[in-house]
Length: 89
Image (tube, rainbow, N blue to C red; front, side, top):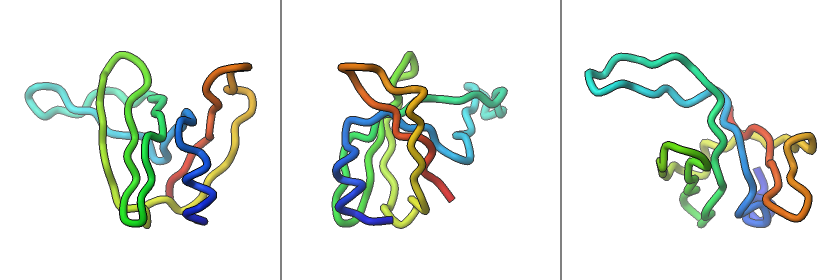
């Protein structure tokens, strides 16, 4: 993944592949669902994403986790945030 290209996508909505696993209060896995994230920051060492809807989650991971990137124009919002597709392995 080109780090400079990834930096240009800050503010884009993204979907992760594979999907994030959510757990309940007892640590049991909840049913899988597609969560929309916002690419918040990209540095030389890490990438930060924020959950875009109701959960208010934030996570940071090493930039080497991002294997590739595909655009998803059908999820773009004219005049607003753009959908960035599914980065992942």
